[in-house]
Image (cartoon, rainbow, N blue to C red):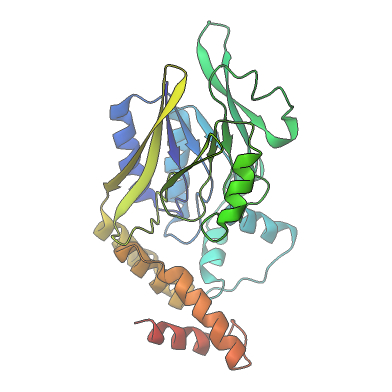
Length: 305
């Protein structure tokens, strides 16, 4: 059995299409998706189309990321996002270009759970997803392959960041019933062993922070002798073509400084997206302004050039 693991696509349908073409050559049996499928990129409907094609072609086991949660929260409690705002323009653009059906799809995604092995009616070993609220003490123990725990950031925490809080990872691994904890969110490919358990972050398929840029990161798990073998991949995609889509979509008119920071991050693999947001908050505090002030964003952008 071979399962691909992808995470943090952030609307990059160029990268997803390239990875799917590669996975077809690997004869995989399914795809695990760890959230943040959309937001920030151009033409969200193109990403949704590729996602639907992926689900039609492969068995998929998907969980929700924090970006999907932001979109859903905007339905429950409108966030006053504004077009042209560096603070919220990219989220506003994505939200306005998704359909009710798209948002309903995200609403039905679980936030985390476990993937276990069971025998189907044909006598074949298959993965079965068990959402968090249905997990029992026997769920992982009765699995016919080493169980996989799926989450976006950390179990129970969509924005849990093991990169910033390594002690959080050790705590989760110590108490993990499954053999492997699969998580994303940090956009950095990583594999760690602790307490006879494994943590795997496949990296970001659409916005990898690798110091290189233009590469899609993901992993493949292969079941051999009742053990998962892990292989991590970084493959190039047509970055120039994807960046041209930003211009066709007029994304800078929607997201201003943050849209430009996103393009820079894609190009070099350094997190200027986060660095810009961080510097904006620092400047806003120092100048007694808010992060809604475009002058603060422009100043942060200039400082980071």
